[in-house]
Length: 491
Image 1 (tube, one colour):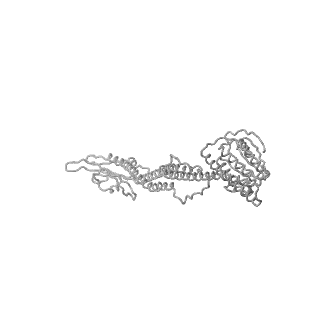
Image 2: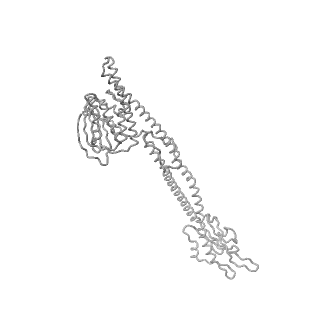
Image 3: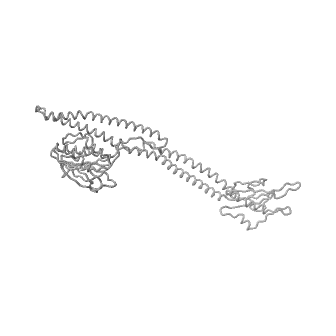
């Protein structure tokens, strides 16, 4: 069974969108609702404005027939005549859509020619040049044009006589024009509304994009990276929120720095007296003392050793935090880092009765040198501390299987190991194994944090032959990995 821990942000519960107001939805409602009210009203106004000139043009078409009748009326020897042939009558009545009727009237209202029934529509001839009105003819609604003109000159004792031409047509064309104008007005307003809605949607989305980007920016931040949010693209309305967030981040950073400084100061103040106390207990165990105090002195020595190691780890963790934020990453060879650790840890392994070996290949990584050395130190301290007297511990560096494109650091032992069901929990702080030892429970937690900072993964695997424990740190591949070179040794 493999327990893998990788760098990840704290899980966040999903927000229930239906329980929260939406700026996007509010803006869209304020856009769509007015459009839904304005479109019918605008379409009606457009319909009325466009229909009037269209109907006027049809009225002017009737003008032509009335003017033609005026030209056909003749005054011969004081008598008015209107001669219309069958062909001319058919031409005057020709229309693709409507029925056309006409009549010409003398000044006294006599019918000169045409449909006499039209003479009753509109009353007697009047001095008004043009009149248009709606009426009913032959039980059908019609539009009538009346045209009056002086057809008999004035004479002594007599006024000028007015003739009149009346032309009517049914309303089929007018109904068709009204439907077309209505369809055009409706279509234009609907298209305009859709265009405005789409443009409004894109405008709202574009306006909210910086806010969404700000949200992702804040979501991706970790507790170690809480610097001020500097976003010139943030809208003016959101700037107060960003300022408040920056103030909160500054307070959190200050509080966190104070906490870390306190831990570092406390660990520094405790390290010296704890070291002295550990030394004193070692001397007490070496000097002659009553047998009944032997077990008490050993427990006291184990407790002081554990406390001293905890203080050292807290100090290392404080320095690691400082280096993480105040130094840039460089390229290191894990083989070189492991070789440099040999001088210190070989001596400690001999004192603990542990056989420490090295299987090193070049494995270049990018990171912080102090953090990488601290990670290896914690791995070795855990292995030597928990493996027990007579155990074998091996440090291994090189390309990681199976693709062999990633750098790898392994510390392997044949000690009691960690049960598979406890391996995930072993990375938590102050979780100590059940195999004894003087550990503080911070080692693997520090290893996990440093690995996560370098984008690496930490795995707890079975040792050789299923015995013991193997801790493998797998780093991301570099753009140009170095060619591995092999070396091997045992203490």
